Amino acid sequence: MRTVSGYIGEFMRQRVFELRNAVLRQSAATLAVSSLVILIGIGAASAQSGTPAPDQSKAAAQPADAAKDAAQNQRRTDEFAEAAQVISGPAGNPECVWLGRRVVRLMWRDDLDTAFRHLDLYDRFGCPGGHIQAAFRCLTRFGGQIDPKVAETLDSRVHACWINPASQPQQAAAAPSQPAAPTAGNAQPQPAASPSPAASPSPAPPK
Image (cartoon, rainbow, N blue to C red; front, side, top):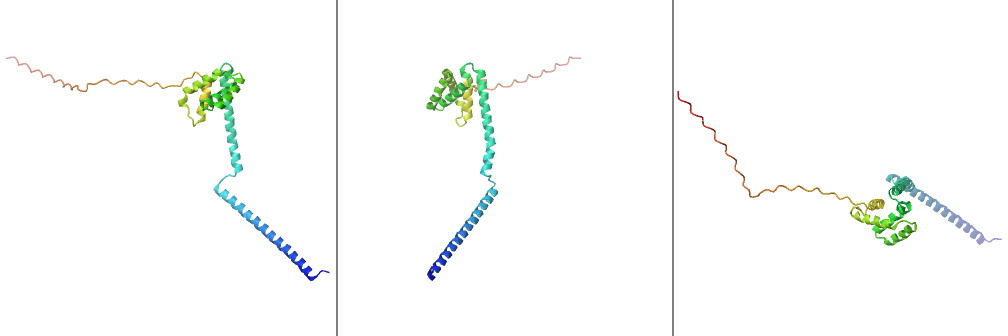
């Protein structure tokens, strides 16, 4: 038979378990309510500030990026077609245009190590090395017109020199100014001519 102390001990353990479960349930409920309040507050602040959700901003940026990539691909296609029409020989082939322009651009930026690696691949495609020399020489003539902060100016000039390595920068011819007629600083003004005296009337004949 159980003793009185055994019943008391079992009763106390049950009460402890029930109390612990009650505390855990209360803590879980409090934590859930706190999390819900925080989420509601964040949502309200985001709605008031007008900041779009990250997914919305990313979705809005995708069409702009796609349009930019499409325009860039079309520009490259047009440049390859132009080079094939203007340049006779291997220098007008798309692979030579692609690699050759990169070599010229890297040389202009003093990235010679990368330029030499591209030049090795350029030679493997059977592209003419003399065209790179002529295009780079043309680029040096237009150095004053290249803005280092705007990449498009360098790219467009490299392509123009690749198409026509003999092009020259246009220099505005200054119109020669007409020299003013020299004036004598010490010349004295000529006096105005005095009017001639009026003729006196002739005397009347005697009667």
